[in-house]
Image (tube, rainbow, N blue to C red; front, side, top):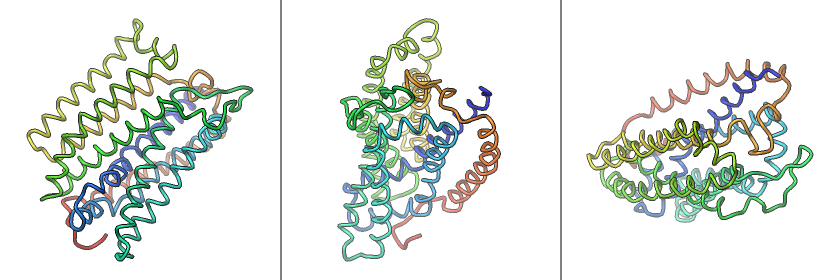
Length: 333
């Protein structure tokens, strides 16, 4: 096995997952916040801000899941049985949210029901994603190269914490997106929400960060032993700096900076996850090299990824560029 090829695929899948979190996170965040928006213009404007891009954002989820199955089949075969309930819940919630998104415009007589469904689907999808992350981070029971745990091993206080933290963080991302893309009463509402969700997100990051080193001895060693701490300490330091800049941007009522700084904080948290786990794909049990597909398969798939990923980036960037600027409540894209 070529270690470099395996690492390349690990970074491709990590990039796809992070791209999904970034691009679908604010969609889900808007759905989570939907009940606090005023019925009528505020809700319609919030919907219009994501209408042109929301369905394309989930391309990255398909790439991440499909890439894991193709490039790291052993990891896929272990993780999926371990996490069937939250993964199925997430997928059903995304379907439910998509249906609600379309039908609230086409069935205005039952719009209140579809709004509730949109919120419920967004909330469940975000919570399930956070639980999935927490379950992988806390470790999965493996024996003879297969899942050896029970149906509810994923359900622990730590996974509930990561689930709740993900919901709060997505809500903050949605609020900062609306600060950037809207104006008037909805933008003012988003400012107020960001001031509340910012400290809540920071508290969630701190709570998860404090709990994580106690899950595995290797986590503690990577974060708190010399010389590892000289490198790993830069992540919380950068998070602290980013949070200071974030609240300063809110105080100065910058429109784009809060969203970009929130994305930067997400990136730092993702880097922290990498520091804790790499090179394991199933912590303490399976490394990326253990789980990797044959080298020829990885090389063949890399050609396709090298073609398709730039195309996906190009059309995604183009769609965001075409629908740039402020949005209103009139019409539907």
